[in-house]
Length: 113
Length: 112
Image (cartoon, rainbow over all chains, first blue to last red):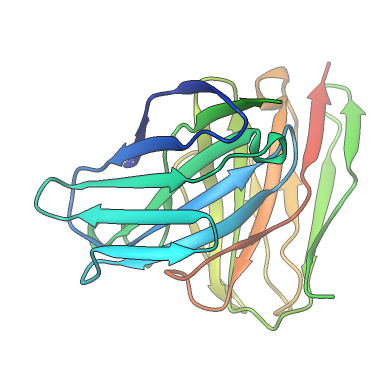
């Protein structure tokens, strides 16, 4: 079952702008992760935020987590053409069993040079 | 270099001809997992393993088998492939199942 659901599913922005995408989930989680996938390639782990954290930064990435709303957002600041990719959130809900990850369907971001 | 290696990268096969997709990791990770990715459906977990000789079904295990005889290897076996198994397959590993995963480059399988 897919727990994470990203919104919006497709985003097109100009280079230098910020890109924001959201992820909602249904059940309690231990952590939430974001991954990037360049066309047809393997996913790359970007950042992990634990359920007791509200915000986390990594370079140009900022992730927030609101457990009361069961949602997370990923902000990419000062976007570059190389940020063009699909972005997935993944959650490890205890209810999902045995420390597995459930991935959303992905969010396609196109950064126009 | 820390990595997950999948082979082959591309594979075209015929219905019913058994095949194996290999996956190997060099990070001494305990957790390994297989996913398939299809347009509009995202990533769906096929099988996962928490350690040697410990495997369990994911969301879409039908038509697949796995084994974990060694910590580093987690092959995916299709005993009798069918066209609906045409997909992009990813192997991934993690030190702990709830931490970040390292993904392989993918295997694009076409069953005709």
